[in-house]
Length: 157
Image (cartoon, rainbow, N blue to C red):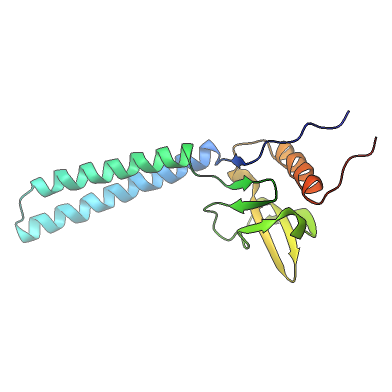
């Protein structure tokens, strides 16, 4: 029995641990902003209410970042004819068609397991698997199916 087609477009979201790490870094940034803001208010004699406004805006920014990472941001968006990589540093080519993929394999870059999609002419896309909110084996199987479908291959039988 052939596999049912995978849904498209489909967003592979960030792992919860990755989201928590980024929100935690933004909270540290909030602390630094408040420290600098307090120092500026103390040195310039500006009304201290500015700090309250700064704190509210910074907290809104932290909450918005958490919401965006949880609900909107994606590592990879799989579309019927290709893919788009989200805000992933060092991913290489961010958008390509499935038919452009010459070879797919796994690699370890900077001690992180990655799926590497070779596009030819020295171009490639690198997707860090641990950033995904999905089991790595399931992700690899789904990518294999998407690549087969995108290349026009159908299973025998």
